[in-house]
Image 1: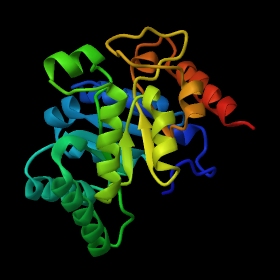
Image 2: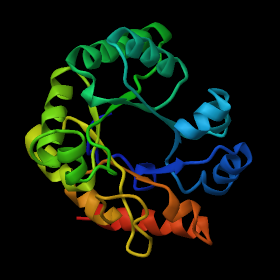
Image 3: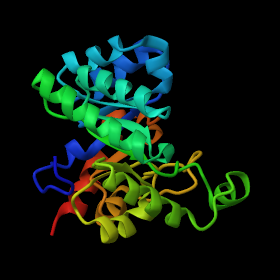
Length: 249
C-alpha cells in the first residue's frame, strides 16, 4: 500500500483504538462502529487479556485489524514475532524504531518471506518513533536524548526507511517534516488526534483530524473521543467528515 494514496477513502483512514480488557465492550465497539471505522486497533491491554482469538472476532466481521504491541527485543525474537503477526492476518502492526537497524531489517525481511509463503498481502510494519506521551522535557531530562523530539523522530525515521520498514507512527507535529524528508513513499499513522470538541487526556502532542491529514498523515488513531462519546456513531461520523473535508481539493 502506498502512502498518501488517493484511493484510500476517508472512512478507511480512521483507526479506532480499542483500549479495554473487556471482550464484551470490545464487541460492542465492533457491532456499533464497524460501518463507520476503517481499522480497529487492538493493543496490549486487550491482546494480553484475551489473546489472538480477539483478532478473529474482528476479522470474522469483515473488519481490518491493527495489532499494536510495539515489539522491541533482540532481532531474532522480533523477526519471529513479525512472522506470527503476519500469520494472524493483521493489516498492520507496530515495532519500536529504537531497536536498531538489525532488528528493523530482520523484521522487514521476515514479513516478506512469511507473506510469500502464505500467499497473502504483506502487513504494514509501523515503527514507533517517539511516543506521543513523551514531552521534550521527558525526552531530554529523563531519557537523556539530546535535541528536540522532532530531531529524534527524524533520526529514527531515516533509519527505518534504510532498513526496509515502510510505515511510521508519528505525532501530527512531526508529519510535515517527515513528508519533506522521506516523501510519499512511506505510510504514516498518527495518534494524538483530538477533534476540537474532545479533551486532550494524556496526549502531550496532538492536533485535529483535519490538520493531521493536511500535514500528510495517511491514517489517524482515535480512541476516547469516540469510545467515551454519548453517541459513538455520531462521533465517528463527525471525524470521518472532517477527514473528508481535509482531503477535498
